[in-house]
Length: 477
Image (cartoon, rainbow, N blue to C red; front, side):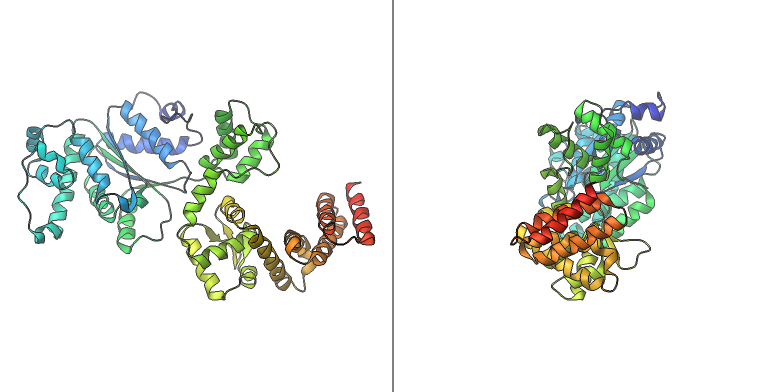
């Protein structure tokens, strides 16, 4: 690993999955390489890579794994599989991977009695080792027996790292069983003087974890290093688009994709793939599409929500990316406490967050969370929600309604086909004329056009229509 400078190693890396170069993670990959080099020097430990789904955690540690293999390290890649997997499954894979080329005599010589402990995790080793003395039920459940098992894992890692460094990648930590997490806590503390690096990826917020799991994670965080992945920069999004499309990306497309995806690499790739498939990359639509892969990723994050919590977030999404608690409480068809409970649950899941320095205001942590919620609503429910929000805003802004006319008009216009057409047109016209007064001609023209479109659904009102057309003409001229 010492042959090239870190910058050279990082910039030259091409993702082994075949998805193209690793874009925009030079600093992050450099930090992981430095941790691996520390481990190679006998200063082992654990490095946690945290981030939202799609942030590129797996691709990043894949880059490190490729570098470590090239340096001659033992690389074992494992992951959490949720409740469907046997207990200690990640460690089962570690034991199998590190013992597959060792015969029974070597295992006994190098590990001593610890070799027998490993049979608990990998019974197939019995072909190379004599079967252990059957433990009693008391021994099987005791802390002493589990300590011996964890200590055997440490012994195995020390033995294998004596000849060449060991890199253990544990992907999706939030999906491992509690025993595996406790084992990771134990092992990570015992290998600080060994050539072993454990790199763990996890979602940053996992509120359903038990207190024991939370405690183990906190211990790991204290004893190891932490790397949080945010969104890619605008320039990096441009490079990612070019790598996917094979052609330079225009500034307008880069701006639109960066704003829509907030730099989430997976979301960027999905949007570009859909535009390429539809032949719209050179002339993208004004509103970028939301690919099904992105929707599904976000839907999985929404799954832990209860029915009323989900309904509350749908209503919040109708209000907008940022929403006021006062508006949501008035629009919601249930008690204030249930609204607050829903926001607490959504905050714990990392779906919404309070807006700093703006008491009572919240925002979705990613713009596409709100987009997914709105796009998944039945049409009738969406129209009704816009009406409820419009009526709530009338109450919230009473006494100062002129300053909020465009916002109120938007919701009543969206609800017009199932709501009050006259009110929708009235608010739209008032907002448009106020926009003219403030020289916001583009906004005025848009509002006049929307008011005219709604008015066409009602009985013909020639004088009203003539007034709207004159207003539109003024804005356009």
